[in-house]
Length: 251
Image (cartoon, rainbow, N blue to C red):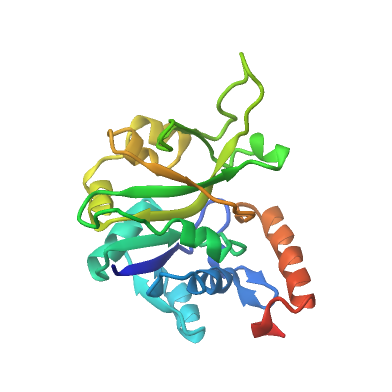
């Protein structure tokens, strides 16, 4: 199987313009994401998919392969589809460009086993929600799955509601995904639905249209950079890693 890694990265963001190039201890955020993904076993090659010449130029300076995609992509899933048209593979492992702390083991968990690459397959990482503040943080997507691990609903508010039982763990979205080319074509051929528009969660494109979305439980401890406060937390964590000699490239 040919499995490639893709990091979607757009420069213009309403909440955090230029986020992929935000400095983290002397390197842009996109470099830290690439570094972690390149270490994942089973991935043949890693690319950045971007609509920005500024990001492309920075990637070239860092020795990262970048593929240009349209500025008109409304979601990262549509950007992934454009990428899949240009770069052929059996499976596309996506890591969001705001996951500089993502563990390589978490990425490896999303590599499919026993899946026919000619089928329409979509999978997403999830983790147990450990920080209570994440339950009310609307930038952290909460998930409800069925007994086979397929998505039932996603929300920016806590789900499920503990009316009859409070002995359960909340689960939240991890920005690591796996798709076949057919699944990405499904995204491109399907219009944005009502729930996707209300919750502003791209993956509703699958659930609203009867397409299964597998959620894979992983032991991620990652912190996605959704705000500038998140960026400061990540900088502090990586700085400690550098001081401990855990980042040999920068020592």
